[in-house]
Image (cartoon, rainbow, N blue to C red; front, side, top):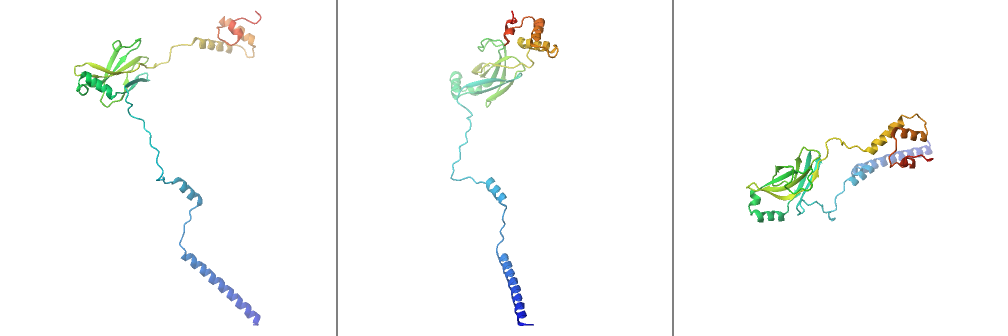
Length: 244
C-alpha cells in the first residue's frame, strides 16, 4: 500500500470518528435539557381570551334594583282574560296611621284585610253603594297582589281594599279603577262597508274573464243599484257616468 492510500484511509477514519462524537454530544445535550410542552398557538389564544381575571383595582358597577315600595297609596285593577282579574296595591305608613287615629291603636291588629270586588256593569258613576253586586275575598297581611276569578266575560268591575273591624264594619282604604273583562266569544258586530265590498267581490267573480271596466260598472249597477259614497273613483261617488 502506498503512502497516498494510507493518508486517504486515515482521513476517512478521522471523519467517521468526528461525526460519531458530534452525534453523541448532541444527544447528551437533549437529555440534559428540561422538557418543555408547547401548546398549539390557537389553543393558547382561546385560553387567554376565555379566562380573564377581574381587575381588583377597577370598581364594580353598582347593581340597580327596583324598589319594592314607593311610599304611595295605590290600587290598580286589570283584566287578565275574560274570566280573571289581577289587582296589585301599596298602602303607605301614613294611611295606616290615619286608620289607627280614627279607629284606635289596636284597630289594625284586630281587624282583617279584605278585597271587595264590585260588579259595576252599566253603572255610570260608581260611588261605593250602587254596585250590582259584590263579593269579599279575605287576604293575608303580607299580600300585595291578587288574582281574582270572576267568571263573567264582558263585565265591568271595581275593587276596594279595606279592613273588616270586629264589629263587622267594612272600612275602605283604597279604591281601584274600573276594569272591563273582554268577550269570551266572537264579536257579533258587523261592518256594513266591508259587507258591501264582499258583495262587490262576489259580483265580480261571476263576470266572464276579460270584460272591460264599463261592463263591470254596469253589472254592479244592475245588481246593487246606487253605489254608496266613499269610493275613490268619481264615477263611483256620484253614481253617474261621464256622459250624463
